[in-house]
Amino acid sequence: MNRLVKDNERISFHMPFTVDKEFLRNNPSVLFVFGDNSRHFGKGGAAKLRNEPNAIGFITKKFPSNDESSFYTLEQYTSVFEVEKWRLENIIKRNPNNWILISKLGSGLANRYKIFEYIISPWLETLEKYKNVILLY
Image (cartoon, rainbow, N blue to C red):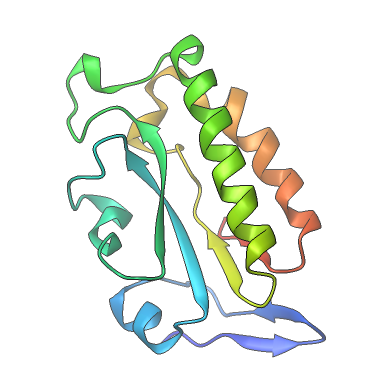
């Protein structure tokens, strides 16, 4: 079983570390952020956890499909990202006593047009200023 260890107001864990249903259910004060699509539908990858009360989808794709029309170009994603960024930062600020575990959002299938490298990644690194945020990569 994956276990989190709190030490000096930081959290540590041993790799490989996997967030799964059991982990989320055993750690209800932990919020897990995963890459999602705008329909909030499908169970591929980390989205299999979408129905857990402490799982939060962050939009990185239009639709749960691999059709060309399912992916955001850099230009299309910018406005979507601004909304998602604002939403997640508010969740982080409103939950200072909860650990927020953030997956490598948009770096997998959703990254057809390099939204991770050019838009998401530079911002994710700034979230480490919050003591309750852990990037899982």
